[in-house]
Each structure stands twice: as structure tokens, then as C-alpha cells.
Amino acid sequence: MRERVLTGDRVTGKLHLGHYVGSLRNRVILQDQYETFVLLADVQALTTHFDQPDRIRGHLREVALDYLAVGIDPEKATIFVQSLIPEIAELTVLYSMFVTVNSLRHNPTVKSESKNSGLDEMYYGFLGYPVSQAADITFCKASIVPVGDDQLPHLELTRKIVRRFNELYKPILVEPRALVGDMPRLVGTDGSAKMSKSLGNSIPLDSSTEEIAARIKRATTDPARIHKNDPGHPEICPIYSYHQAFRPEGAEEIKEGCSQGKMGCAACKGLITSALERLIEPMRERRAHYEARPGAVDEILMDGTKRARAIAKETMQEVREAMSLDYFEEGRRGLVE
Ligand code: TRP
Image (cartoon, protein in one colour):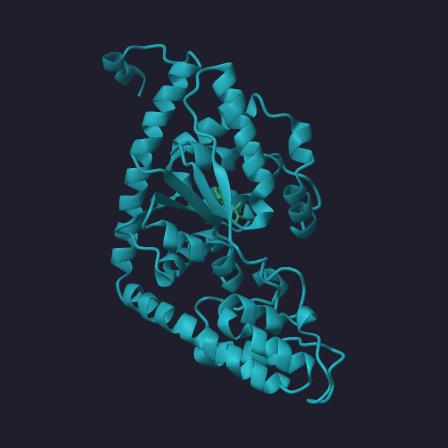
């Protein structure tokens, strides 16, 4: 049996280049080698957007289109909807019995997200979402989870839950490992540490040619560099980091030209704009193909969800047995369904 990969995204907004570098790019490669599952995390999106369910509903298909646009292939990968797998919720409840509140409170990603979420209080579902994420990963016994580095604390928790479950009950769960992209996290066009839609410093994957050019044009560069011939500092310039991420073969030349004051920002931005255009142009084509066939996207999500659900039911049965919750024999279980 091939190893399984599971990963996913909250459906709070369209995906951007930061997601691409952090994990989407990896998924497209992994789907050829592994049995790949990609989750549209609508329940997790509710942890911060419970007051905007319609927004999540709208973004579900947008994110699905982003997946298809980057080349996640529904023939190879199973794309599915989290809220339609009730076993994920069941596993979350069962795991939550042996996860301490303290371990959640100290999760650095939960801490920083809760600061940025605008929520003035800590909510139960939000505090516990890493447990639900462990359920996402373990219901299909994924062994590989391609994610951005901010997700590493959640992966650690998942591994802990798996070890604890296996030792308390029966060794049936699989301990996953994280696979972080080989590039550092993509900085925002304003130079801030993270590209993020809510910070308004992202380049969405569905950008038009004009939008790419405009966002790069507006992007921050080395503030100390005023004239073209001033020596620049590529290591602090977001544009240089984009060269490293999207046209690594040309990055050295940029570094030299910039730091020696030989290459100006306009020329440097021109090169990255064309590289991004070359990256995004085939995405636009695949997106257009599916946008013209909304029924096909729904089919893909329904098929994927059915496949995922079948696996979730199997794991749930094993978990019930392991935890002595399998009260009735096979044929009689129908009585309580
Ligand atoms: N927390 C992830 C994010 O914000 C999304 C996610 C939900 C996820 N469930 C997952 C990622 C399971 C990996 C595995 O991007």
C-alpha cells in the first residue's frame, strides 16, 4: 500500500503565492508518488469566522478552484470537504479526552493566530482546533503532511496524540511527519514576515497579468536605495526573495547586480513580473477550464468526499474497537443507525 499524504487549507480566502511556496507546490509533486488527500477545512475556518458562514461557503469552491488551477489532479488526489466527514468530529471528541488544555494554550501558532484574529476572547473550538487537525490527519492514517512551518506545533501535537492513543488503547493510528517546503516562508509584498491576504500584501493565484504587474510595482524594495546606482541590499528586499523562490537560476545575478548598484529596481521587478506571469498563466488556463464547468467541480468534491468518508468509517470502527466502544456486533449495529 502506498503511503498517504494529507494536507489542507482553511477556506477563509483565496490562496496566494505564499500558499504555493509553502505547500501547494509540494502537493503537486507528491500526488504522483503517494495516495494524496486534500482537505477543504471549512469547520476549521469556522473557528475564526463562525459569524460569517456564507463567506466560508463562497470560498469553498474558490479554494477548490485554486487547487485545480495549481495542478492538483482529481484523478490522482482526493479533494474533500471536512464538515462532510462526521468521523473527524467524532475523533476530535475522543482525542480531546487525553489532550491537556495547557498544551493547547502554549501552542505558539494558536497564540499568534488568536492575537491576529480580532477575537477578544479565547473560544473553545479555536483553542481545540489542533485536536481536530489531528483527527483530519489520522482518520486516513496519513504518514506525510506537507505544510508551512507555522503548522509544525500542530504536527507535534498530532504525533503526541497518536503515540498516546496507541499506548492507551491499541496501536492502530499512524504517526505522521511534516514535510515543510524547502523555501523559507514567503514574505509579503510590503516586506512583512508573512504573505497574507488579510495583511493586503499577497499575490493571489488567480491574479491577472495586470494585477501581478501592479502588485510587484507597488512592492517595497530596499528603502536605503534611492538612485539606481546606489548599492542595494538584496537580503532585505522582498523582490529578491521572490527571485530566489520563483527563478532561482537567475537569483545570483540579481544579487550581484543589485548589491553593486548595476541593476535597478525597475529592471529587477520586470524580471520577476515575467517569471510570475509564466508561473500563473497555466494556472489561469486550468482555472478557466473548471470555471466553465461548475458541475464538474461539484462532482470532484462529492466523489472525493465519498472516498474519504469510506476510509473514515473504517478507521472509526477500528477506533471504536480499540476504545471498547463497539457494543454491538456487525449485523446489529444498524439498530442504532
Ligand atoms: N491549519 C491549516 C492552515 O491553517 C489547515 C489545515 C486543517 C490542515 N487541517 C489540516 C493542514 C490538516 C494540514 C493537515 O493552513
